[in-house]
Length: 145
Image (cartoon, rainbow, N blue to C red):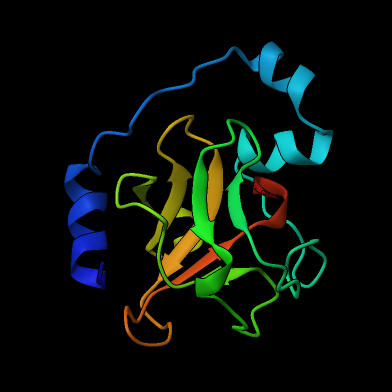
């Protein structure tokens, strides 16, 4: 994946997910901690350098905390210095959906779980090779499996 593909997906939609998980707001509140709910369902952001996975390099796969869909592999995690876990690519092209985000007077690309629409973070074109991408993800949106 590269930045041009990300922009294409943000403008025209990502590939369909393997499956869908849909729950009511009440059901999500029962399953998630208040912080997880605020971040994944209300699109909040955790404070930088506070997340459990910010500096962790334990081997495994990072899955969506809401629906357990595998999103990122620990082998492509890197230290971006931004204060959030950063990855160069998702596990599968259809794991992530991309939304044009014009909040806060800027244009960014929001990343959400393509299976359950959980807010994950954002993706930027300033990552390391080979993709040049930096998926900047909230720890509260993830669980390590």
